[in-house]
Length: 112
Image (cartoon, rainbow, N blue to C red; front, side):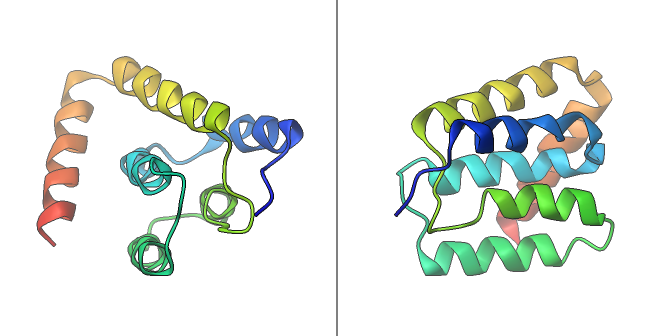
């Protein structure tokens, strides 16, 4: 497996601020999928199905997410740390009503 390059890391985060805000609930799923350093075919299939079921997801957001779902180019540890930091920063910046909404959406996704 090849690791994404530093340029890939920069590219992966460059578009984060241009993503649809509603894509934020998907970011923890991406982080958790790679937390063990391996994205299994079953995990990949499940995540891709979940992403494809989001009719609101625009092409730019889909492309951004796809960068994180290549088992042949897994994110490095530093990329995962940067993703986690971004998730935490975005969660802190979100208004309380949005944080509650994200939590409810995550709970609903876990049940589904």
